[in-house]
Structure formats: C-alpha cells, structure tokens
Amino acid sequence: MEKAVLLEREGRVAILTINRPDKLNALNEDVRNLTLGYLEEIEHDDEVGAVVITGAGDKSFIAGADIGEFEGRQPFDQREAMRFPRVFDVMANFPKPVIAMINGFCLGGGCELSMSCDIRIASDRARLGQPEINLGLIPGGGGTQRLPRLVGMGQAMKMILTGDMIGAEEALRIGLVDEVVPHDELRARTLELAAKIASKSPLTVRVAKEAMRASERLSIDDGIVYERDLFCLCFSTEDKKEGVAAFLGKRKAEWKGR
Ligand code: COA
Image 1 (tube, protein in one colour):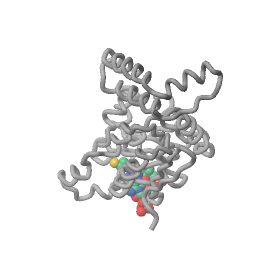
Image 2 (cartoon, rainbow, N blue to C red):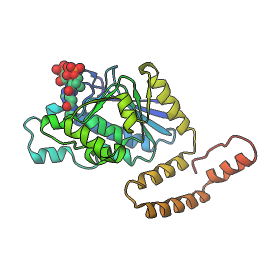
Image 3 (cartoon, helix red, strand yellow):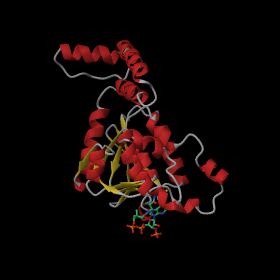
Image 4 (tube, protein in one colour):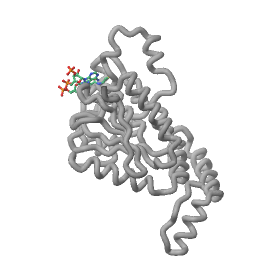
C-alpha cells in the first residue's frame, strides 16, 4: 500500500505530499505521524533549504481532519490525538521555510496547516474554508488564533462562523494566500519560489524566519530589540562576511550556512 505521505526532493527543496486522494487528503493519525517524522528528517538534512507541502491528485490540498476519526470519540481520546508536538506548531516553528502549494480544497485542518506555513501559493481552482461549525465543532488546529492574525477579526469571524468556502481570488484579497497562479502553473511557480529561497544562506534564512515569527508573540518594542540583537548576531557568521565581500567584489556569494 502506498504511504499516506510522500517525500521527494527536487534540488534543495523537499516536497511533502499528503497522499490520500480518494479521501481528498484528509488528515488522519497516520498522516500526522508520518509528516512529523519526515519533518524531523528534513530538519537535520543540510541538503534541504526549503519545504513545500501539497496534496496528491488534482482536486484537493487537504479537506480537513478525517471526520471518520471523530465518530464516537471521547474527550480524552481526542486530547490524546491532539497531543504535543502537533504538526501545526512544528511547521510554524520549523527552522526551514515551509510553503503551502494549495492545489484544491483547503478546508478545516488543511486551511489551518496552510496557515502554519510561511507562504501560501494557491491554484486559481483552490477553495478555502473553516467548515467545522457545520459539524458542531470549532477549528482545533490553531484556526481561531492564526486566521484573525492573518486576515483580521471580521473576515475570520465571517469564515469561521458561517463555515462558507471562499475562492482563491477572495483568499488573496483578504490576505489568506499570498499568490494565485493558473492551476497548471502551480507546481512550477511554487518550486521556483522555494528554490530561490533555498539558494540563500540557510543560516540567515533561519534567523530571518525566527525574527518574523517572533513578531507574532512579542510587542513591537520587544520585537525591535530582538531583531536588533539577531541582526548583530549575524555579524558573527561566515555568510555575513561572504555576502558583504561578494557585494563589494562584484561577484556572486557562495554561502556556507555558517
Ligand atoms: N474527512 C474524511 N473524509 C473526507 C473528508 C474529511 N474531511 N473530506 C472528504 N472526504 C471523503 C468523502 O467522504 C468521500 O469519501 P467516499 O468516496 O469514501 O464517500 C471522498 O473524500 C470524496 O469526497 P466527496 O464529498 O465525495 O467530494 P465532493 O467533491 O462531493 O465534495 C467537499 C468535496 C470538500 C465539499 C466535501 O468532501 C466536504 O465537505 N468534506 C468535508 C470538509 C470538512 O468539513 N472539513 C473539516 C473537517 S474538521
């Protein structure tokens, strides 16, 4: 039987594909565990500079948590299923950038997983939503926290309280996705972006992501101080010396990741 998550590499980009197309790539325990395992592997692989996550098939990114797992479940069973570390938080804090390649339905836990990514590129066929309200549930993968931060309170309220799906262009308009591309160009465009990021100094990319993620939890004043300290820390790296020397020497920098 094929694995529920596939890992492939293209150059310095790792591509994770949720592989349950007959269930529109719904997130079940197997998918969550395999994804966590692959992320651990990717974290320690110096040959990987960026990660792309997508769904198998032509129809769906991830259509949410596997609703079949909810039936008959008791609260403590559910709590066990939602034990830490959770894939949503691991991805948000992952030391390498993660790009969601949204190739179709992006619902519930799928929308939440995409919001844990650093950048979202959507096919013009994508449909996004938080339909949990229709199941007598609320988002449980960070949606009530990350969605208002991304799109503002009113738009988040509209999506979570109605459960309605929105199209890719509307998602772009409200800031839920960062780019919309024709469906047939989605993979090429996403990999182009990921490869570009993966060609930079992995150490500097990591620090830049860390600084931006810190803005989600720090006050503006604390964040500015944190950024100043990380900026100064970059003066200790070989890559800062190389980057400055390359600019002044009018040549291309060769990053060491140190
Ligand atoms: N969990 C489990 N199975 C799911 C699923 C989910 N979140 N989403 C889709 N599937 C399954 C369907 O049950 C169906 O399986 P079957 O062929 O064995 O019956 C298969 O995937 C195809 O889905 P189907 O509903 O037939 O496709 P559609 O094109 O008619 O509708 C959706 C697509 C996305 C609108 C619809 O599948 C849907 O509403 N899914 C649930 C979305 C949701 O509520 N997510 C949040 C969960 S918390």
